[in-house]
Length: 142
Image (cartoon, rainbow, N blue to C red; front, side, top):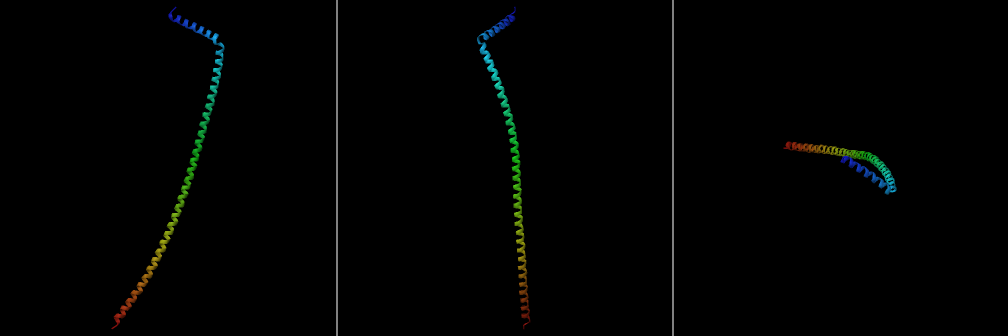
């Protein structure tokens, strides 16, 4: 026999012998360990399944929450935009009203000024006429 054949024969025999010795010494315990390992594997699979479900639920909840927050932000932005527009309209109307009042006050002031100028002009014309008449009388006097 070659060394390889002898070596594999020795390993094969020694592994078989070790299995036999193990079965004799720990046969009942190994069965208990295998049962416990199977139970633990089953529990581990259940925990993995539950965790996977929880992760999916959290993912969908966070997605729904994100959509809700997005809608809320759009709604609030629209409200703010509407309030801003109404406030600007209010300010614009107030300014237009003030401008109209100022225009009216200016027109009234101009009318008063024209009336005063005409009155002053009439008074000046009367004085000038009176002065010319007095000057004419003074010229006619010997």
